[in-house]
Image 1 (cartoon, rainbow, N blue to C red):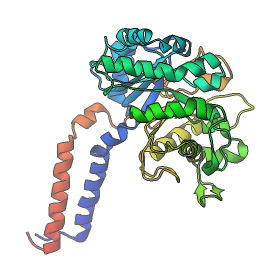
Image 2 (image 1 turned 180 degrees about the horizontal axis):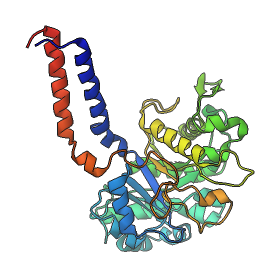
Image 3 (image 1 turned 90 degrees about the vertical axis):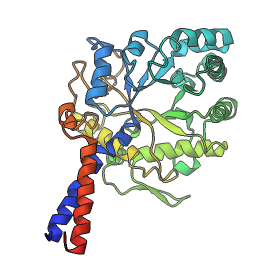
Image 4 (image 1 turned 180 degrees about the vertical axis):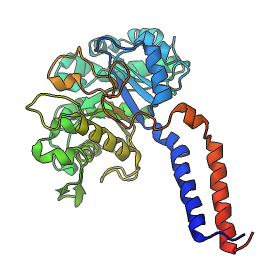
Length: 384
């Protein structure tokens, strides 16, 4: 039996389509996380949230802004990688080793390994508080928590880090000349980066193109086609603000000699609603930013100064948080309403139902691929 070239190519196209949908998809999931904030009314029970994330979304990582015991219990046996947070006001006490040991004993040991806790974050955007006590305490607190994890034989399972706003950068344009703010660079960030390198932990940042854009730079912020921005020092043309922000962080780290430390995006997002004075605050823009962001960070393209890599990225946020203070946008960064319905069509929901996926097992996909290549081989020899 002879197969026409069109038949063979059709089989090959189907095979590669199925392979991309079912074999490559799990690798995609490993890099996308979400910030699970709880400053909201009518929140669903944590067990329901955990089940929803596992069954209906591509989320494989969750960042908490505390170490809530109910949430940690709810995520047991899900496999989802959890980052817990020490609230800013607790940081000074962690400068005493015995308190750090107690903190690990109370907030980590009862839940691991059933709950996959992978990181302790010491505060959030501590340097931006301008609180000298907090800023001076953050690195000693991190060191003590690591020591406590080591004593509990958890240091290889759980990292210690702290997320930063981009306010730590003094001059971010062009990205290649960016440096950390004077004073913080030598006295805080250098010892912090030394600790991260020694413990194989990431430097975590919260880049928000939303807060850095204007009407003129909206396309640049949303990953839309645009003329680009040239960095004359390197010759690189930046086609989106996210890459420019990340490369500013990378350049600042490199200036201090720490370009080998991994960068993780602890927060980024776009609101679906805001005040009339703000630019691009609507559901379409939010869907566009988060969709383009996810495609970009998992693509392997990297950035001009960090090519050929993916980035572990946490979208802000899981839910709209109606009890937050501040401008309207602060209450509207959520991917979902608290009743679990999407605020807008987003890339987070799985494109297939679990039932449909069960009816098309990856082994079936492999079988189809094998048949496809067999047909191609037969066609090449012209006989069967």
